[in-house]
Length: 351
Ligand code: ADP
Ligand code: MG
Image 1 (spheres, protein in one colour):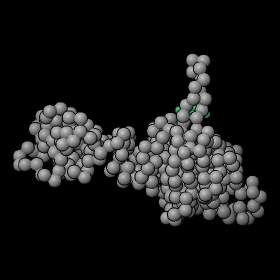
Image 2 (tube, rainbow, N blue to C red; image 1 turned 180 degrees about the vertical axis):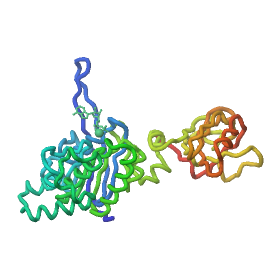
Image 3 (tube, rainbow, N blue to C red; image 1 turned 90 degrees about the vertical axis):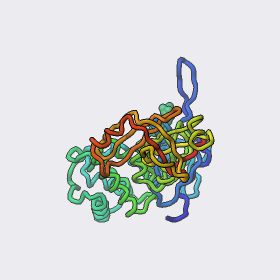
Image 4 (cartoon, helix red, strand yellow; image 1 turned 45 degrees about the vertical axis):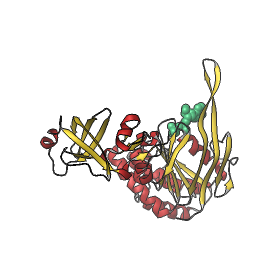
């Protein structure tokens, strides 16, 4: 990965006026965001609905302008440039294909606008269709394609002009789960092949973890954390990130003090916790807590245990069903157990 900065946000805010009960107020869609995205990176904006992801993307594309702050594209301040003067392209969730045009015409549209000769155009359209595995579909109309195929056409159309940055706003949202998972792998492979910076918007944490080099987690217009999937998952810095990305136990107050000796809030992932019988002594290298299994939920691949801690609080634990059957795991219900986890697996939270 080159160290070039593809995109930089410098204290970017975007407010919208809103009318409520005849009063004019404002909503801070994006609230003082600063970030840097490297050239060639697969970078995801992850967050719940309404957290400012689309507004951020639209400001990169030039469909919207910051109320304050600056956006730089490869070092150039583009805050006031119109969309067509920015070397970026966008893929939307609803594909926005031209229904009356064939696949080939849709993909070649950008080249036609640029008045590229037909022979050159056809060659490049074929290259793009090959890239998205749709060679031979050139003569079809969008209505004759599946959802996944339409998505690929939209991708080919967006990539044919070799933009420096491709913006994707929940592009897989309309696909069913299996196809979505397949497209996640494909999209990532295509990004690697073309080497273009991808900025990918999603509210799906698993999708972001699967595809991204780095992720920015958005909450209410602000960035809570930026990091690699492993950093975000293993070391969430705030309560919001711990809860939004994966499942986490949040422990604070007296319960935290009993376990760690301090009441600083921490999170611990359910799969990092070992569940053992009460015999023997706890390993001093671990944090541990004792309790009673309140509930056992068998989920095929793994089992989820809900444990009431002695002295208050509860923890969720998941264990893979490597050697256990559903009958075995059910026996745990009502048992006294010791829970333990490596100290480094606890993540201390600031926010
Ligand atoms: P996301 O893509 O993360 O779901 P958006 O960026 O679309 O979030 O929206 C962020 C916030 O800004 C939301 O509260 C949304 O209602 C508000 N918003 C977005 N666009 C407009 C607009 N054109 N006018 C008024 N409010 C808007
Ligand atoms: Mg959105």
